[in-house]
Image 1 (spheres, rainbow, N blue to C red):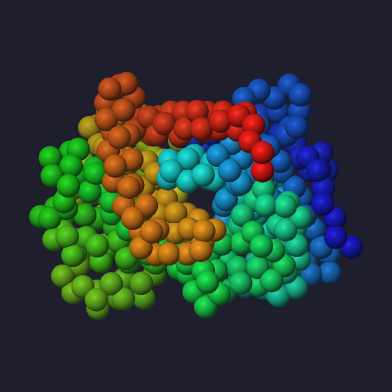
Image 2: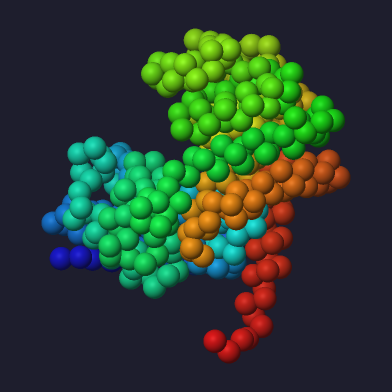
Length: 388
């Protein structure tokens, strides 16, 4: 039997949800759906289960003000349903802001599948999930995220028309790390222009934490631009791949050593929360710009960076190249068109820095304001009725 539950699910107690730059800070709200809860609400949260395939998923649609919600599917062994719910709510909010600043006519959504992808993933489970995506009638487009891959999206798409991030063999964009890394590089160029007066990393020393798919491609761009690069990663094989491709790259033992080293730019491309009250005082770089999500451990870290004179390029702005890449599939994927749109991350990042300076606020706050303005101003136009 397949069930879809509404907001009053049995375990939906108080949760920690955040919005915009504040999504890194903890704030306990009232139970979801409570009439006393204040602030922006999610438009729709759906619990999906199929006992025989082992599927248990949650789909959250934060906003469709700009268009149908787009966001990836995270397959992860959460400790509890509550942890999964908190994650999907936070991630879907972040996607609304990311898509708005990427200039996409798409809202924000996200999905999580509770389980161990290495043990629980199956064709039946993915196809059952696809039917739930289809049941939303196009309000939500899904794509890859942690624990899911383009090949998985091909399977999901056998049951749903609202799937992006598919393999090239099926008309998809393939590996979204291509434009994710390209977008981070464009944001870094804008940060260099703002800080050093020139939009290049030539002659600058850049520390890249995490050289997986995104970090490795970012190193390619940096070396080509003439930067000196130092890296670290817990995966020795990933480091070896980079060193074989670029023998000039230096390696340090861990992130602590990288942060304390003599670098001009720090690029977190691994897990979130790398910047906190303990690490920021040790940071010697003048710029922080990387591909990781949720780099700030809490909202106060943004202010701490400003106090130290360190320019922070908001992560959900500069790492939006991936969502730009998969979103292009909706029109029929064209890499040249998608890359041209991702190149605009340079201009968006520069605009955020200028707005932050003019308003006397951290760049993350300026980015939030810019995203909210677009969602409000463009979303308002839905009130002008058109015959379809």
